[in-house]
Amino acid sequence: SGAGRCPQGAGFAAPEVAMPAVPSLVDRYFTRWYKADVKGKPCEDHCILQHSNRGKAIKSISYQISTNCSRLQNKVSGKFKRGAQFLTELAPLCKIYCSDGEEYTMSSCVRGWLMEVNESILHKPSILQEKPSTEGYTAVVLPKFEESKSITEGLLTQKQYEEVVVKSINATTATS
Image (cartoon, rainbow, N blue to C red):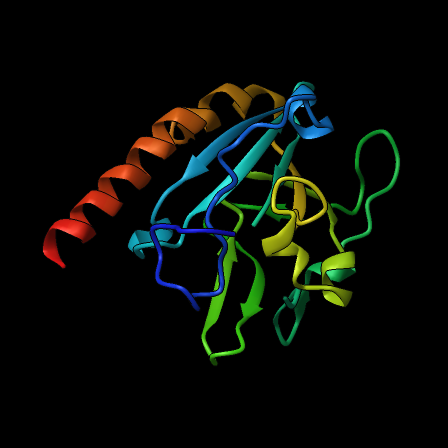
């Protein structure tokens, strides 16, 4: 991707801002929300996709969180989603390792049940940057229905997120 608010080599692509002429599946069925500077870390921004049925998909690679916890062990079954791991908004979702040696731990950003992880990014991690709004998602998190509305109150709309990015770019340019 082109210019972003984070330095090149930080391991993340700039968010895709231009909308295609024909709406994609994501554009038709998901609302984009953003969490800027996760855990107070500049440029550690996450995009959360909210499905029209209130499911969450988190974008943005190892699912081995600790010795005893792997998100790949998450096995969901049945109508009541048995076996799903419950995540808090600060729960580590995956670890992203960059070619420059940097390591990023991606947080869930929302409370809910882990419905699936995107195993395809394990085989082709570049799709995190190449297709962040489609195949480059990391996981799908389903919040409790009664919490769905309150979860979005702490998130930014795409327009609000773009304003944060512009302010950050302007502040960086002014100090350069």
